[in-house]
Image 1 (cartoon, rainbow, N blue to C red):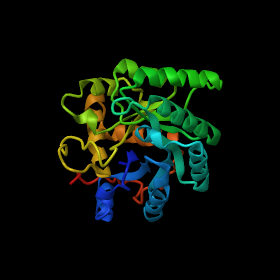
Image 2: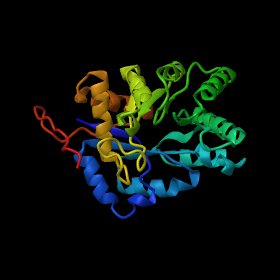
Image 3: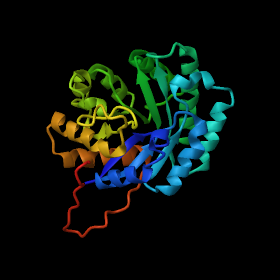
Image 4: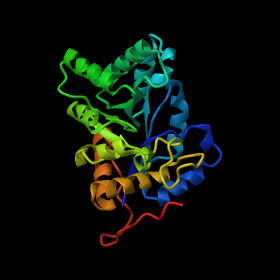
Length: 279
């Protein structure tokens, strides 16, 4: 059974001292690939250096909406050049709208549209952050697709927390929907309801580590990629299908969206390798 964590931030300082050990745990849990998101384009060399050590890492480049005040006229060109410089770049982002903590809405719209245009130019998906902004986000994306005559958009609504109705807005736009550890939280009924309506061919899983550790690890100071298995297990329960089905579906979807090619497991034709329990 193979799992892909489609959104990590393992370049953060909390992983600096023991990343090799963290890697051994994600390998033991069956995590065969990770997509590393980017908060600021200036993180790119550091993320690239990690990928040089861990070949199971693909990555993105972009500017987070909470950093939109750092956007400059040349930032789009920097993101474009970084993305073109390395074939391991599989997405633009994370980008989007966050109206929970920031009032710099106009700057967020400007940075978001510019990054959408870079993604379109490079034919890459976008990793979209959306918090307290579902309705304006959907409206903005509809206008963007109409302005440029696009039938749909390719990308993922990451760490999704919206209602089933809001979920459908973004499915209709062509997006995949990714669930994080929040889907395991006891009171996250809205997220759990959304997890039950996403079609199997649009479903993704992530940790968004080091944030949002899932139950039963909630309360720990750091989330990590091995814990994406708990997200998959919760989706298995919510959707009433075996864990192996969730793993197969979400892995296939991640490969489809991000253009990933996984190496074949080194096991015999009759052997089935099961991941070790997460520590």
